[in-house]
Length: 53
Image (tube, rainbow, N blue to C red; front, side):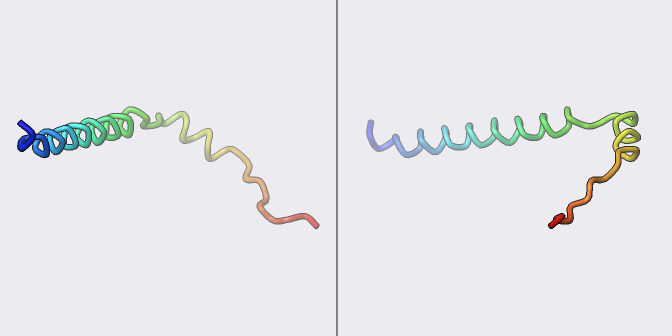
């Protein structure tokens, strides 16, 4: 039935969006750094961003 085809495409689009958003949310919460990594970041020296002509 070709009349039902737009509904099918819409459902595929919704399914893809939900999977994509869930994947991004899970990756965001997995990559939380520990306290050890935060303390080592503070000890690193900042490089100068100025041009040396």
